[in-house]
Amino acid sequence: MAPSVEDPRHDCETNVIGTLNMLEAARHQDVSRFVLASSGAPIGECEPPIHEEMAPHPKSPYGPSKLAGEGYCSAYYGSFDVETVALRFGNVYGPLSSHKSSVVAKFIRRARDGKVLEIYGDGHQTRDYIFTEDLVRAIRLAATTPGVGGELFQIATNSETSVNELVDALVPVLQEAGIQDVEVTNTEPRVGDVRRNYSDTSKAKSMLGWEAQVDLTEGLRRTVADLVPSAELESPEIG
Image (cartoon, rainbow, N blue to C red; front, side, top):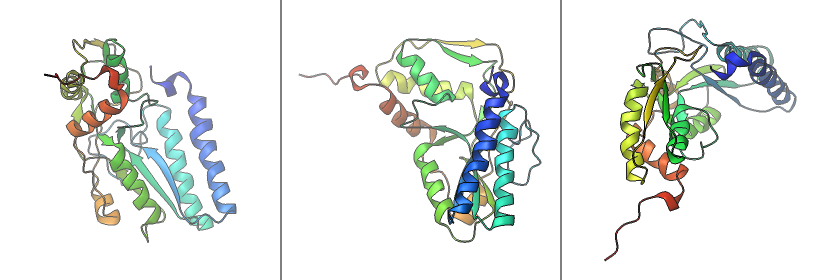
């Protein structure tokens, strides 16, 4: 079960009240630009690609908590002249993401620890995986590009990848790192998960001059190298 389905109040307190508190602080401290980390979750179940003009229909409680944050950003730009920019992140992965509960970090941790990789449902559900380096570049541009106050951007790769395809790409990378015999199993679908999700990033390209540069295979290699201790990597033969 998705965390927000188990505890909807936590997401509300964190993402709604938390965002409001940060916007109030920004308003009273004359912060020049406020960048919100949002998500594709406000849109919910739809025919992708997701774009900024789509009507939101959240499927899990996480979605409306992020949607409220976007709404407050718009209101603070309109009412208080706080320059806000909301970024809807794709499924983030990469170095320094070991704490995340998202699927890439979770799969790598489980494989590293000798545990089975669990795919919810049939594995045909799709996501848009965005590498941390590309994401950071988007955040910097959102914070510094003139004339984008009050805007909302999809930040992803404009590429649809199923969980099965992700596993097919990840397992060889894990094997390169010395993690053999990776076991994969399917479990029950998770309540609140959307079936398909990927983004149209053309607005970010035209207004921020941004687009993703790291492809999935290269991103997975760099993520595994970061999350798997060097002692567990295959050593080259000597002699």
